[in-house]
Length: 170
Image (cartoon, rainbow, N blue to C red):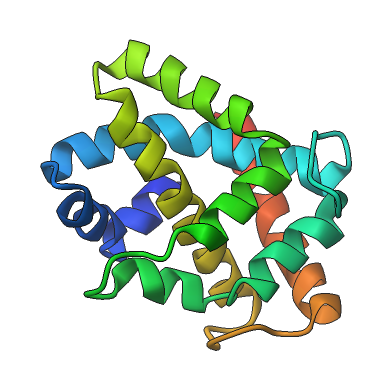
């Protein structure tokens, strides 16, 4: 099952659509186009070959995810209040290295899908939080909040590896 399907089944797409004021189909198309870049960025961070932030590597990515609330990030996206996107922006900074890369991704997806670039820029940190939160919940057995970077990072690496491998085998 793809990450996009898992996020749709968990209610992320509908929640994000409501928050961004777009229809669920537009949110689904946007998420489907943005997720490969997010997962690829996570994969590069996990292998140490990405731009990454100051922390770099899987340790930095796991730190950004677990330190950002782990599985609680998914709950924040699904919650009734507006998503606090700083955690998502931190993850994007870790996997892409700069805001310019995030803007470039949004611009390319806008050109491909016809979805407004401004909407896609708002969608990116929400999707990063949802994907990371989903992975963290699975890495910690569905627990809330942060698990220590050590054990959580190992499990997170395994889940990320399987997602990246699944995306590459398509």
